[in-house]
Length: 149
Image (cartoon, rainbow, N blue to C red; front, side, top):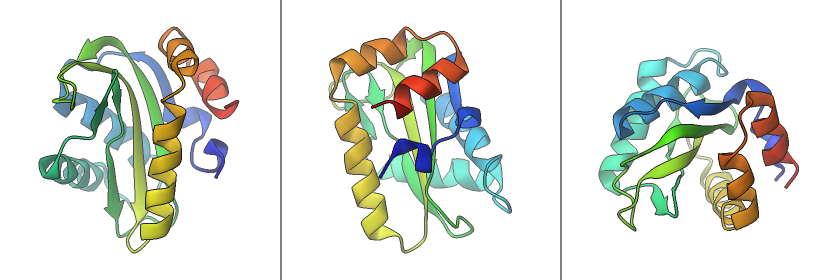
């Protein structure tokens, strides 16, 4: 999988004001709903929040990968946001997050879902990449840095 298959420039936002976990998930829901015909922002928000109730998607080291399944979704769709200030996200390491990659997948896309999550998580193991993403001030640059990996 290549990130450009699930990510587009319109789904990347740099230096967003997050304020809270709920607000961050709201931002991600809005970005994703704009890209999937027939999908409501509230449905994405509810699905992402329901997933968070099962256990945090805050992986540690300032990274979160909220994800969910949406019945109306016909393909994998991702959104990448860097936050202007770190936000408490109940991460496994107890530290706030400042990089968020949300992923929405179709119902029944279990294999794709797991594979995509693994590949996205492995990208964020690259400390140099994370540093560059955190210090990118432009939406298009954020996209370009992400897909160059």
